[in-house]
Image (cartoon, rainbow over the protein chains, first blue to last red):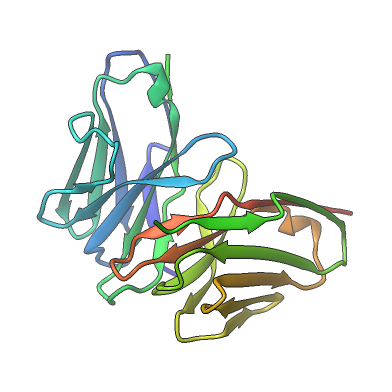
Length: 116
Length: 111
């Protein structure tokens, strides 16, 4: 099946620094990618929808200046957590959908961010 | 606003028993429903995708049904194995393709 790769799988950073997480579709072109965050023992919460070549659409309550999303190509989307704080520590997961309209979504393995 | 509920939140069964996981949603105007498996600290693995026009999907020991009018889906796992231990999430997609997830059912299959 389709593969979505996330990197890094885990990262520890100091408070105030910025962290970039990459999401790549390895064997298909992803016109749309979604970014989620997941707190322990909770479900995934959609943060933003990323369409190739256009600005991301953020969900209510998500700070777009803090969580910068770039979808520069059909195979790569990046999430940058700027000026990270301990409360940003979470599990971030991306998903990607191919050119087939509203088809199955494929998920990355997730990236665990710990901000000290 | 769409709300997705999964019951039970946790389930423990002995190996060999069948598993029944329930998912309900409040808005029946869904495009599709997807069941996922999540292992601790890992991403999601898609198990089954049911389009809104379908009633069920099957893959090996897994069978998922969908009753859109009543806002319910059920995932059946036959003859459970210890390797089936994981958290199972259901998610419904709207016409824009956005997924709304349930909180999941944590399953433990004991040898």
